[in-house]
Each structure stands twice: as structure tokens, then as C-alpha cells.
Image (cartoon, rainbow, N blue to C red; front, side, top):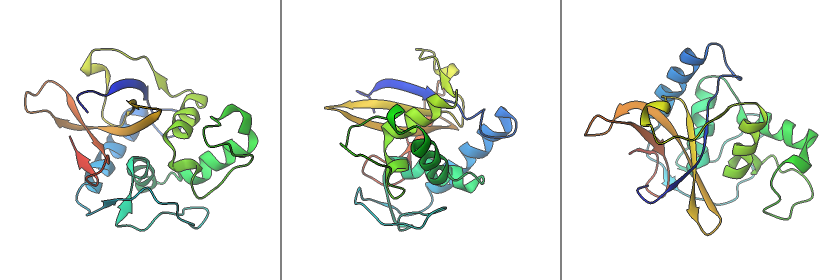
Length: 176
């Protein structure tokens, strides 16, 4: 994460009750996910719809976000799929697809970034760590066209200067 470039920070205030309560609930849900043993696995899975999920012991960075939202009663699989069906041309065409795929579309960082931006949940990018609150989503470029996403939580770095992020970049669902 040290060399990551901050790409986009998103807030969930348009999808839930009050912003503060929603963000606290999401951050708590994300922290709870770090207690589960998950192996990083970017495989394509056929999953149920709506409320489908890859096997509980597998996942990638987007699955952290999807599972945290699901813990607070929000199905990003369904929401992203419905928005993509209605607005397919507004979403990135990084995979040369001609239609939506309810099994994978919500598991792609650029699609989540587009979805949240379309819902008006984009925050300004700043260098001030205090601008990133628990429950905010932060996506960044890993280089080479790869993107990554995590959720800010209410747990501080050792220096106590900034909130940590729950994500999965290869070692399962972790807080760093």
C-alpha cells in the first residue's frame, strides 16, 4: 500500500440512513470480516442472484466491500447489476463485454468506482488523512491498469495519525 496512488475515495451517504451511522456500521462490518480466514482467489464463480457470493473462504478486494455492505443489508451485486443493465455504456469496457454478467460485474473495482460515482458518493482526493472517515471506500491504482479497493475503518495506525484500511490484496481480509 505504500506505493499505491490514491485514485478515488467514495462515501456511502446516498445509499443508507444517516451517513455517520451507515459509515460506522460498514466499518464495523469490514473489521469483523478480518476475523474470517479467506484465501485470495480471483477465479470466476457462478453465483446466485440476487445476494450471491463466492465461497466464504475465498475472495478478492471487492469481496471485502460486497460482504461489508451485505452485513448492513445492502446487496451490491443486485444494485450494480441493475444500474449496469440500465446504463451499460456508462461503465468501463475493460473486458470487451457486450452485456452485463451478474456473476462478476460487481466484483470489478472499476465497476464499483463507476457505480458509487454515478450515485453521487465521490469525495475529493486530499492529502489530509482526517478527510477519510470510517466506512469510506478508497480505490487506488496498482499500476499496469490494475486497481484495488478497501474500506477505511475506525482503527488507527501505530502512530495514531490515520485510520487503517480493510482490504484483500493477497493475504486474505486484513486491516493495514
